[in-house]
Image (cartoon, rainbow, N blue to C red; front, side, top):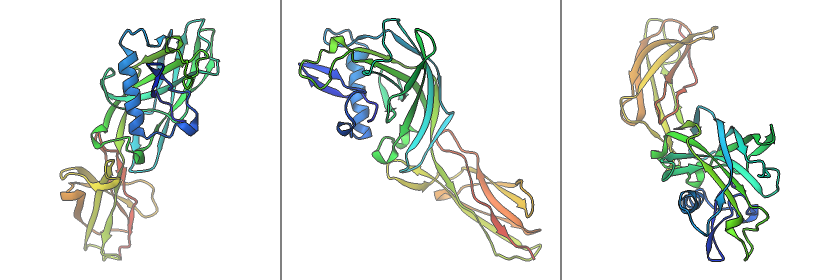
Length: 299
């Protein structure tokens, strides 16, 4: 099931069914997931209400996640998150209906523009009577419309804790006031980037020594909204590199910039057998990438 906080009308109140809904009933899309958690956090995260969960005495720290997440057009991307959970002595983190999990949010913690969760709750191992080491995942599903292109960039880390305390979120007599809920943001961060692709073609092949080689290519990146790769805007800085046949290291030849649609074109003088490639250092929104080398036979 997908870690989520689902809004449900139960006995006249909004109820958390965040981590407890059976997998067969938890096939909501990523966009529905985000809407649900946003409603829950808006209703219960800040407002003092009579029909709300009580504040669970749980806090989170030492949140660690990969520095960057490179996301393409359709393939799922998963990254492991570790964090420390500190809880009151009377919080039973080993109960079957206690669950926790990490998530990412874009923008403000109180009114996030977007959020990303995991497909399963985190697992935790007690390190003392009141602390536990937890490991969970963030699963990004671009094919489910979880990301818009404007979502590329910096995201912040957060974690949730939920103690149902024997309450069944699907039962008619579900008492939300007996449910404990903890939600903490500002725990760390990562950069979610649009994956990129880079091609190269050096011609003519073979070529006579001292003659001109024309090297072309194209720099594209994932468009999360159309699920296609599209050319980057003109002016992106790309470096042409060369690796002599029989060696393992590339050296810089010259820097060029992309033209319209990410097109690349430059010329060099052929001198010896080897491989030419373009390499792109990336920007905040777009992942770095290097093309596979194109071998040129110099005669």
